[in-house]
Picture 1 (cartoon, one colour):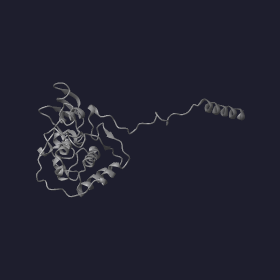
Picture 2: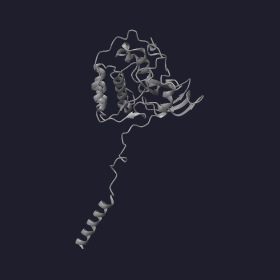
Picture 3: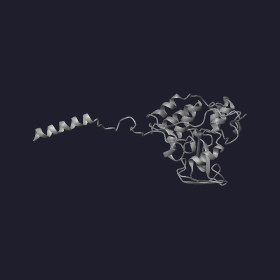
Picture 4: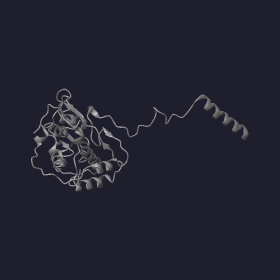
Length: 258
């Protein structure tokens, strides 16, 4: 009986080999797609915690931090919001201003006043900085659009010497923008990671990863204290994704700033 079972098993193996049957689990066209980028909403590249992140190997954010130039802050002399162009310029030429683009991307239950540009209401669920749900209503909003790397911070870490088109690009790049609750955002000011982090601790890794991505993309430097703070945060999440994408680093020629 044992010999008979062995013979049957051998015959079965031969049949499989002849018929060409095989396990396709790891074959081309059927590979796992874990970690693949999630398509962004509304064609807008997104920020950490949102669609549009790109999966990177463990430690990639730490590697990116180490690639940043380290220098002291430059003087703030000459800074003004207007040095980064008019607020919410439509640099991607989609017919909607940048603020509405980000509201459409980050809010839920979005409603418009006309067409699909001007957002009049929605829900930020949750606010990445505070962790609570925040209702957006145009004209009395408790939702801000934050520059993850503050513009005055950028001015003091390299942007002062840029061409106007690059400053305009940074101010309107979806990679550097995030809808957040007004209360925690207004405590941030122009702080960097060494003196301000989101009260919502669960979002700190994503927040720092976004700052690193923006500084790397635009070749901004970090201070020694800022680099240390960034590394301290990312040390607790070494496989944190590094976001990518956004707009080109130069705005179209029709935009001008001082």
